[in-house]
Amino acid sequence: MNLTGILIVQLGTPDEPTGPALRRYLKQFLSDPRLIEIPKLIWWPLLNLIILNTRPKQSAKKYARVWDEKTGSPLMHYTQMQTKLLQEKFPGMPVEFGMQIGNPALLETIKKMVAQGIEKIIVFPMYPQYSATTTASAMDCLGQALMKIRRVPAIRFIPPYYQHPAYIKALATIIREQEAKLTWKPDHHLISFHGIPISYCQRGDVYATHVKRTTLSLVK
Amino acid sequence: MNLTGILIVQLGTPDEPTGPALRRYLKQFLSDPRLIEIPKLIWWPLLNLIILNTRPKQSAKKYARVWDEKTGSPLMHYTQMQTKLLQEKFPGMPVEFGMQIGNPALLETIKKMVAQGIEKIIVFPMYPQYSATTTASAMDCLGQALMKIRRVPAIRFIPPYYQHPAYIKALATIIREQEAKLTWKPDHHLISFHGIPISYCQRGDVYATHVKRTTLSLVK
Image (cartoon, rainbow over all chains, first blue to last red; front, side, top):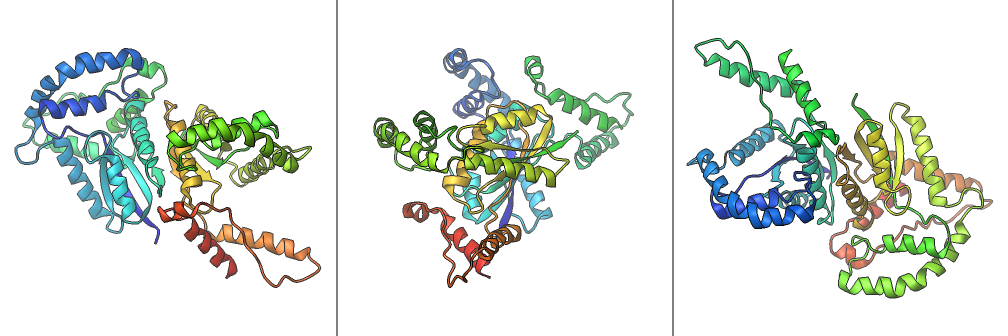
């Protein structure tokens, strides 16, 4: 048997919209050197003495606003749905998801897959555009998890898919579905992406280029 | 452009068969927790106070015996030849090699490939049979190298090929070539593999199983 599995990698979500849960989440999130490129010596006291004593409470309130009464964390809910739907498309391949931050941790998911006898894993990061802050961070997290496993599966990491026809088609479909619900016709489409610091781009992060290419493909 | 490259990963070799070069090599080699599963607290003093003060000189003498006057380190020589021959088979894909220990370090090779615009790397470890001490160690080394790179290429790690027809055929060809040079016919073939501690197998290393499967395929 030489079983292949699919592993969806997502950023992660706080366990609940409370101060203590947000503190755990933010501590892990903001300790990632891919995300915060400030030297540890400066960043550590800033993070631990100031930010983690003020931000968790504020953030918890914001998370509470998007938290669903029944389904909880939106990111968790949609990731579970994505996993389920992808599993239906690949009945012969176990599909699992793991989080870079919080639960279920990437390491735990990989351990589970290895225990099932999976020897090859297709790693599917939920970042269509490459950025060191997301894609490379996911790869770091994966590498660290694999260092703790005796029987390391063969890994295939899916490259950035910022211009993949299926991705562009999915975006276009969502836009058209939303438009169909309008009683008026929009003059313009304003597309917004998550930002990263300009200095990261200047140091060589290709995120902005990938975002432009996604936009160009979508406009076509 | 979405260039794919092939990266051969080999264990590595001392730079020269001398005490100081062997000390550098053995220090890196024997500090790998995949190789030596003794707790750091016990192993560190053993390694640094005893082993690294006695072994390098002895090992240097043994390496000197296999060192070639013209081509130097056999492992380096054959790895360079393998890279060159593989490059001829894949003219459109840059083929490079990197060492887990010593030079050229995996990190330096990957940096070179990324600088060439390579966005996807097929990683080809020179270990047909899986062992945590070799394959997983190569994966660790790769993971650590990628953590130092801003534009991490998409990685595809070639799974263990202990029973791959091309590998078995290559082994059979070598055996037949050697037999053809004999003036007598051998009664038996004695096949020898590198060993690992039994305790590693007991803890779940699949190396012995892969070795048996290679042998079975070869006998057929």
